[in-house]
Every structure is written in C-alpha cells, then in structure tokens.
Image 1: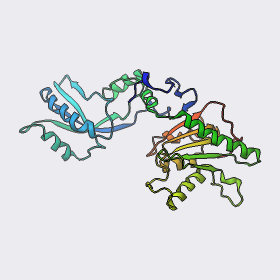
Image 2 (image 1 turned 45 degrees about the vertical axis):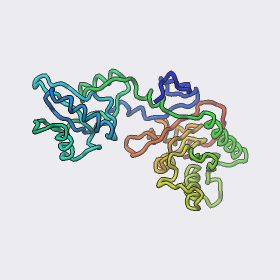
Image 3 (image 1 turned 180 degrees about the vertical axis):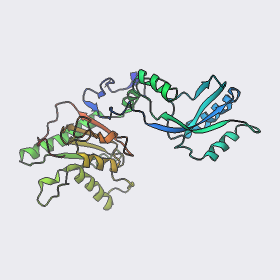
Image 4 (image 1 turned 90 degrees about the vertical axis):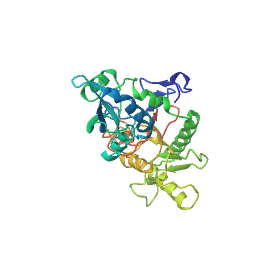
Length: 322
C-alpha cells in the first residue's frame, strides 16, 4: 500500500481524476446505499475479551474473505455489562458447529457465551463521516478512516505511457477508418499485461459484408483472443478468455459489450468517447447501468474515460451501439 504522498501519479481525489486525464468511472449512485451482510457475533463477559480478540487476530481477520476493518469489533452493552463482539462474516464460516469448535479451542473447560448470526453490518464503509455516524447508530459501530475511494484511487497501478500508446493506436486506426468512409469506426485493443507485445487490435466487424449485428469491435476482439487460445498461441490458457487484460476502446461500450467484458474477466477498460445514448459504463450514459461496477453482478473491472483531446476518433451516430 503506497502512501498518498509517495504515489508517483498525480491524483485529484475529490473528482477521481488521475494525471488530469483518466476519469474514474464508478457507480457512485449506490456507494452510499449499504450492502448488508450477516456476521457471527458473540456476547461475552469482559474478562474473556482478550482470548476472543486473539482468536480474531490469529484466524478470522487473516482468513475472512470479507474485510471487516471498517467495523469496531466490540460494542458494550451497558444494561447487561457484557461485550458483543463481531467474529467473522458468514461467507467465511457458515456452519455454527465450526464456529463453536474455534471458540472452544481458546478456553479450558466450559464457558457460557451467546452466539448469533443475525447481526447485519455494511460490507463496505460509507464515503462521508456523516453517513459513517448514521450507520454506526443504525447497524453497528464503524471506524472512520476517510473516504474509501481515496484508497482505491491510490492503489491503482497505471503506466501512463502505455495508456497513451494504446489509445493513440486505437485513435489513429479509428480516424483512418472514418476517413475511408466506414460507418462504424470503432476500435478495441486487448492487452495481456503478462504478454504486452502480443496484443489484439480489433476493428468493428459491421463494416464488412456478411457481418452480424453483434460484430462490435469488443466482440470481435474477444473472439480473436479465443481463436488464439484455440490455436495454441497462448500456452498459459486460463478459464476466462481475457483474465486481467487491459482493454482500450475508442468508444464507450454498449450493454452487450460491457457484459462480455465482465464475463471475460478483464482487469481494466479505458475509453475515449462517451456514448450518452447507448453506453453502459458511465452513470450518465444509456440506462445508467455502470456495468463495470454494478453490485448486482458477480464481477467488476476498473474503468476510466480519457478526458484529454489528444486522441480524436471517428464520429458515429449517437444511437449506434458500440
């Protein structure tokens, strides 16, 4: 984890902009609507708290796939003079017997405690201190460590020169296609970070005869990656076609292409031109799906729009799905 002051990238945390060029695309509409999860909690005598905290540190905190660092682990019950402690998420352990076995391992003899799995807590921290205080009262006491999106921005690892190179590549080809009179001057560049020289550059297939309506540049690119895998060009084939790929687009992708990128498990998408009518990444585009950061889906990917004017693209009708 890099401290903000040591980050080589210039980041505007308030507006989510990196190096004055990359605008972070996230579903900020839902970020302050808590996604609640069930956790295991235990009510104990305060004298037993040391052993329980040790169990949390040595086991639950290390192994729980859900980070609960934004929660205060302990809250006091003044009326009963007991402590209520959050142990772990039910995603980590769903069986009550397993939890009881772990608790029995830290005590000699029989100890009385109340175990519960009906406590609901926010899975993620809110973006403001005011909401943090409100959720602490409504759900469970939280720790305020600032806007969590600041850390997300700070953790991005981005080679700005590589981004410029690939966007320039896509832009040049798109302009060339438009100059040649092609109706769909959309371009996608697929880059495997572990094999950067073997990139796939895909043009929109709808410019060709006998093409299909779904032959968008993203779909053509994914298909090309699949063909390489089938031909054995990529020996280290993964279960997902484009696992951890970076994808550079001339135009904001439509819902079909945005979802295809979800299914392919790409790491990052950077696009040049937003499509207000048909795009599916920005909240202000299309139906506001924000497909890359949609809580209803089981995967996400980073998304950015290049907001500089260095890389022109071929223009398309605003109702065209890209």
